[in-house]
Structure formats: C-alpha cells, structure tokens
Length: 330
Image (cartoon, rainbow, N blue to C red):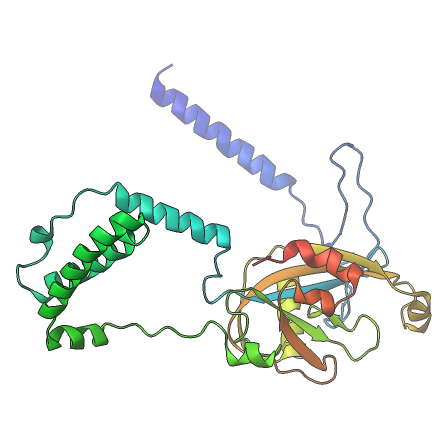
C-alpha cells in the first residue's frame, strides 16, 4: 500500500471516530458539586454537605455565606508593608564584612595611579590624600616603634598633599557630600502604630480591632459568599472594613495559611443558623504600596501596623500560634 493511500485511510478513520464520539455526547444540566476525593480508594467519593444547591435551576443569593460541613468559610487578608531600608548588621556580620574588606585590599594588585588619573588633576590629588590617610590609619595599628617611623612619614606625606589641595577641591568635596537620613523616624519616637513610616527595616502587618471584648484584634477577614473565590472575598472585605484608599497587590490566588476554630455554645445558640458550628479561615497574602486604612467604625474600630514580635501583645496566644509561620522575622 502506497503512502498516499495509507494517509487517506487514516484520515477517513479519524473522521468516523470523531463523528461517533460527538453523537454520543449528551447535554446535561449544569451542576455544582463540592466533593472530597480519596486517592487511596477507587470508590465513588461522597459529596460534602454544602448550603449550595446542586441543581442549576436553584436561585442562590449572592449575599449568602458559604458553609461546608457546618463550617463557615472565611477569607482573611495578611497585608504587609515590606522593609524600606536594609536592616542593621549584627556585630558578627560587621566584623565579617570588615575582615573581608581588609583581606581583599591586602591581596589586591598594585594600583596604577598614572593609568586612572591625569597627572596634576584634582582627582589625583584627592586620591593621594585619601591614600595617605589610609596609610596613616593602617600604621596606627602597628607596634609603637614602627608606628613612630611610619606615622611620621605618613604625616609628612599627608601634609604635603594637603598643601596641594586647592579651593576647587574643597568646593567639589562639599558638592559630593552625601546627606544620610535618620533610620529612626518621628513615628518610631512617638510609637505611632498606625503609621507606615515606622520600623523601616522591618516588615509590618495590618491587624484590625473588632468592637468586642474577646478576640478583638485579628487580621481583616470576613465570610466568603457563594459564587465568590477567596481573592474576591478578601478584596471585598478589605474594602468594606478598611476603606478603598489602599493600593494593594495580591501575591497569588492560593492561600498562604489556614486556621480553623469552633464557635462557643452561646454564640451558636444566639445565631440565626444553629447548624454552623465553627469557621475555617483561609489567609490571602497582599502587599500595600500606597494609601492608608480608613476604618468604618462599625465592623472595625481601630487598626495597627505591627511587626511579628509586636503582634503577640495584641492577639490571643492561640491565634498567634496559628499565624506566626506565615509571618517574616525581619
């Protein structure tokens, strides 16, 4: 059989198979089923109990909370402000970098000044002055005898170079001087936990206070509505509780943590839906780039931007143990 004939036979077989497959497809009504699948068993999984109707003809309110297996599904927001400056070095890190700097200088090749600086230029005179100062500083760590000999030579060399420094050099040095801002801000001195201009070298997290006596401080959170994903629910709750004056960026669509707790018996008895026994909170991570929180004084009455260590003073020990692994130590 020639190649052309074989190709035609294969095309005919594919068309016949596609036609037969399409004829076997049946149109079924839309169905929403939340099921738990076991990967160790080949049996048909049992659907979880949900407050969502499984028929497509059911009309579901968009404001109805999502409840699965007597647990209310809640979306929480871990909003963080990233560090704005580098953190302070530890004493060990300072000694290590100083040792590496000195080691690199000791093993560096001889510097050819004539190749890099024009003879008699301002840059050459400035470099000679800096080199003389470095030699004087290095000689100060030697023995007393060698320090006296080398120190006198270095002092004479520095004085000779200093005589060559003109007014032009002094003006250039003033223009090139760098002004460093203070690492401690006014918000740090006032301990203003509502300000984002504090603890610049640390990661700050947003926590809000609910109008109640127990478990008042927590991350912004709220119930997930039906036909709503976690990111949409988190954004809606942030807008309702903290206002819309924040420029936020969600890191992803997958939760970074999970926290489950049961309601008290008194709370369940007073609730309109006694079938709900607890809540499952899924935390979504987000960064703030600009703006500030504006509480609604209804669901939220106060807020604070705190570090991981400072959060212990606000939330309960059980809540902190549940969320501490999601937070940064720096």
